[in-house]
Image 1 (cartoon, rainbow, N blue to C red):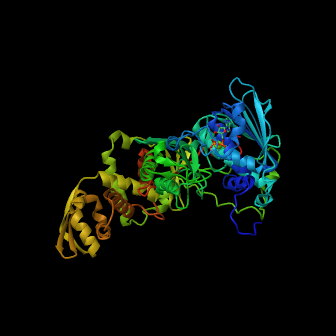
Image 2: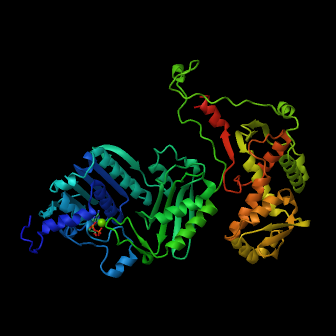
Image 3: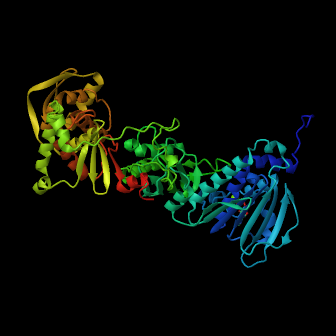
Length: 592
Ligand code: ADP
Ligand code: MG
């Protein structure tokens, strides 16, 4: 320790180790930097070998362009790089590396051996032992580069204290490899741990790479994974993402890559969740690997030693485009219900199934669904308390039948309505699948579509008068024309007092709710306002959950549901669930 408090120059080795701390924190940082170098060397195959979670040894082998023998002593010195020369180069970066610090930092923290061959020249090898450079020696690989890093931090015991158990460090190395591999699907990646192959990712497409990398993730369903893309003048977007049929309860699989670098860019994570919006239930998050290719002039990675952060000059524009891309391209298809992942029991091992006796450790079975034949059901329900809603529903459904081709309504349905479950779900057999339809959401959606397309506006004999708050009053004064376009003629009869004099015919039964809606809106983007208006109306007029529904009404509703392209309710929620025959058969072990 310097006790004189006088300024002096640091011993170069000490300075080097201090600087190295910023870049190399643990084995995973070494893996990250060495993979980056291999990628920059245009490798088509990268192999990572670990011993003791990388604390004993990390070896990275690539088949890239290699390092010329005369450059080998240079590559481990401070600020040496082949990737940038001038400051301007930083703004036209095509490579992962540019700081020229990685090998220097690694060489300051471990015993590093680099063996490489560049073109047809003779291969050569150099050893740098914790900052001490040895003589260049002949010999090395036939192609590419092999970097071997032994005993990381052995000369810096304080740093070793911060490392975790080998298994944990190994997992971190693996995560880094996977993260990189996802950005470079055309490169094959393999990881060995003490000679055992732990991960094998052959060169493939972008989507398949994500699927391969997440092969152990039981939540991700390959058939529910899709690719999205979009373009703007100075950036391009590409994403591998899940449909709303599969999701997680955390954001851990929303990943952002900017120019193929994984970055922590929360604003874009938000753009993704915002894009999915109500297509996913509350608290659910998609799988989404978003790759943004931006004009290098608009990005600056030189703000974080490990390049995890980025400055984006056109962030707002990218944010907007991500939302638009997801909303337009993620299809709100019918989700398939997944039935238990466990394989059917092997022959002769019935005891595993606890047949005939209940086991305290097993969850109580859910009561079986009781099949109610249509005839019995309509007899039972008779005339289900002929409430307003039913009349309205029938009316709307009858009306809408008229709109459809006559053959269509006379045609035998191509489904069998099996009955209603839990006073909410209509159970339908169609083709090779069973469908469960949320009656309220389905009806709401049908009404929503009708309300939107319906013309007939009625003049009210006595205008409906209502009073509003100041903010609403102001909003209405500037938006009377908009409401009139939607069949709602409004007039200001006094300060804060308004009169509604026309209303679309279909909305008559719920005119009070319409007035309530008008008197509660004081802000908003107009397309949003329109959606809200229709959704509110459809929601009020629709069959509620808990309502009994007779077979004819159900069938009429189901017919319309099957005509929809996107079965989502006006709020964006999916309301049809499908179980295929195959899934059912498999779930009872009839087919493997
Ligand atoms: P940077 O990647 O920022 O340039 P590094 O310290 O990681 O800095 O590497 C220094 C230089 O060594 C690189 O610019 C590159 O020329 C060379 N190099 C490092 N690893 C490899 C490799 N695997 N294949 C070919 N060249 C390499
Ligand atoms: Mg580098």
